[in-house]
Amino acid sequence: MKQVIVVGAGAAGIFAALAASSRGAGVQLFEKNDIVGKKMGITGKGRCNLTNTAPMTDFIARTPGHGKFLFSAYRAFSNEDLLRCVHQWGLATKEERGGRVFPRSDSAIEVRKLLYHRLQKQHVELHLNEGVLTVNHTDGGFSVRTEQGSYTADACIITTGGLSYPVTGSSGDGFHFAKKLGHTVTPLKPSLIPFTTEETWVRDLAGLSLRNVDVSLWKHGKKLASQFGEMLFTHTGVSGPVILMLSSQAAHKPKWEFPMQLRINLKPALTAETLDSRIQRDFQKYLRKQAGNGLQDLLPRRLIPYVLEQAEIPEQTLINQITRTQRQDLVTVLQAFSLTLTGTRPIEEAIVTAGGVSVREINPGTMESKKVQGLYFAGEVIDIDAFTGGYNLQAAFSTGYVAGCSAAEEEADQ
Ligand SMILES: Cc1cc2nc3c(=O)[nH]c(=O)nc-3n(C[C@H](O)[C@H](O)[C@H](O)COP(=O)(O)OP(=O)(O)OC[C@H]3O[C@@H](n4cnc5c(N)ncnc54)[C@H](O)[C@@H]3O)c2cc1C
Image (cartoon, rainbow, N blue to C red; front, side):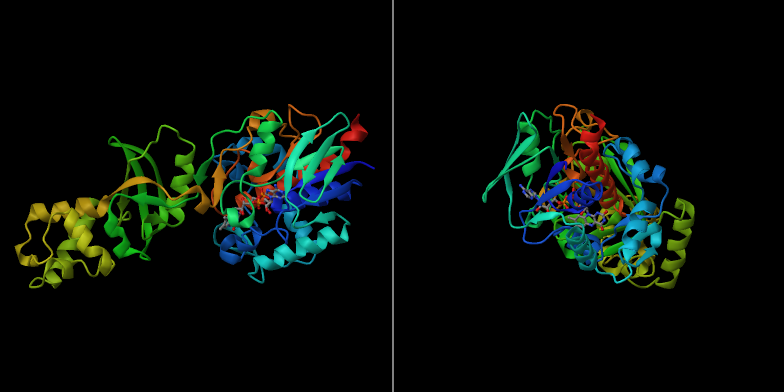
């Protein structure tokens, strides 16, 4: 019987172990935590957005970190395959806005527990509380050392995750193992991460969310990228869905260096002319009041002083004293409210890590190392990362599945 060691029981490791054991391999799964899938338990704000119903081509398009590398893995184990599996195992799911799939119970813990029971049912030998210290390639295969002992196997699958949320166990061990085994690890960067801003006053707006805004990144007067949707002010900068997407795009553009400018079109549905007419109507309504009152129907109250400041209109100015030029400046600011981005929050706070074991050194059809026979990688330890929407977990499940199947079958092919 083929012996397979899997290092790390996250989304990728669990699926690798299940796939290998269902193909008849003896599987030992090592996890440094006392539970499996600790990170999975906090995904989707505790609800676990486990995949998306979008076509696989969309998955690839929404994976700025080497989406095309995942083509074969998605063909082998798609979102539909995943849902068929978890439904068979007893998990009811539901689809929400944007094709996002969640457990019907809204409980990520349910998913984690389901997978734990599945591992037990398939007799995967689970070593909890047993972090792997070293992985060595030997004549006969692999030897793995933990604090409790040494273990050998014919194949080894590294599924240790990235660098984000290290409290969940993903502290980058797999990158060290990969380097020692001769692999290239591309620069590790935070992705799906809030930006920090030069403007410290954002802290006064913390918690304020803006819906249906068009947010763009600029450098030296050139537009780099834009996203439409919802954003949020935080104590140190900006976050929310559109910001996370922009951070994901920026993680893959080394030339997009900070500082960069963020422009927020607060009223993207209106042209400058219609916005001006709208402001004129509102100003008529509040003619004898101060400038701030004239914007109360158009903007969240907390934002008004900062919009007026960028338009250089003192807040106390009476509306009937605002000049045409000032009103036009206001239109310009409403369409390009501006912030200076100084960087991102630390990688520990990122939803995913961009960078990792180079995809050039991994066979996309099997997840086997092109450098060391019998060595496999799956999940976030590989240089892959996607937008939010269930795409990262599906990438981990699919690559894990492929690695598990290939590791178990390797001997039969020889
Ligand atoms: C807050 C948050 C919310 C998220 N929400 C979503 C979401 O809703 N949908 C989505 O698609 N993606 C989401 N993601 C991303 C997703 O969780 C990850 O992409 C995915 O978990 C990666 O799976 P993985 O198995 O590669 O790594 P991980 O899930 O990080 O698992 C790696 C495992 O390896 C173990 N390990 C590490 N080193 C060792 C060692 N030396 N020995 C033994 N074990 C080791 C770790 O303890 C860990 O359990 C979220 C991420 C975060 C941080």
